[in-house]
Image (cartoon, rainbow, N blue to C red; front, side, top):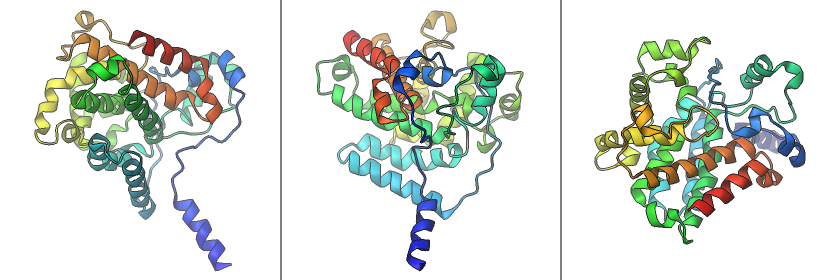
Length: 309
């Protein structure tokens, strides 16, 4: 009896990255016009009000994830740097923040009408889970493309890979709970909690200021350039371009001259990085079960990206 109780307690302590266990008919999802499967939720900025206590199990979760990343990427110093510099801080600020589950359905009820919103995959998903579920498989795809005769092989090197990962971590910058960032200006904390205002609609200067805080508190600056952390500022607008274009239906910023971004990377490289970020977002948003890998939206985008490259 004691052995069974101990085993049960250990299972409770483990963090599941697959938080939606309902079965889905992939063909039905293909026909759905639901925002859940579109990968586009850029006008959803409701921040979770759940409090998350620091527990020993969270430290266990960090160590298990770090071990998994090292095991799956034994010769990848970039992913190992990510697990060392960024992952501990990401777990701290994103594990209790809603990405698309929970309050997302309250938002959809209000936007589309309760009778029009499907709930066959309504399990909650933390922002932390969303980011890792997109980043880890997208990293494997990027490494595979490096072995083929694609743009990725020709233009994505160490610096670009670090910016790609950083850009994806930042692509939902408006969904972080700004109250957890000690250096975040109070004005942005207030706006993030205000249903009438949207972080995404703020001017570029405000986005730069917000990104500055998030980058430093997540140690993304050290991840981008371990030897010279301050050099990340040269790529601030590159990161914003990648973050803006993780979703293509709205809030995109492909026109650099119109929106005032001044990235330093070549346009061709930036678009390639944005495409990979978009794939990562789709992987996290669309795939909840293995069969969902055949989802039409994801397959079409991947085919187009590979053909373009």
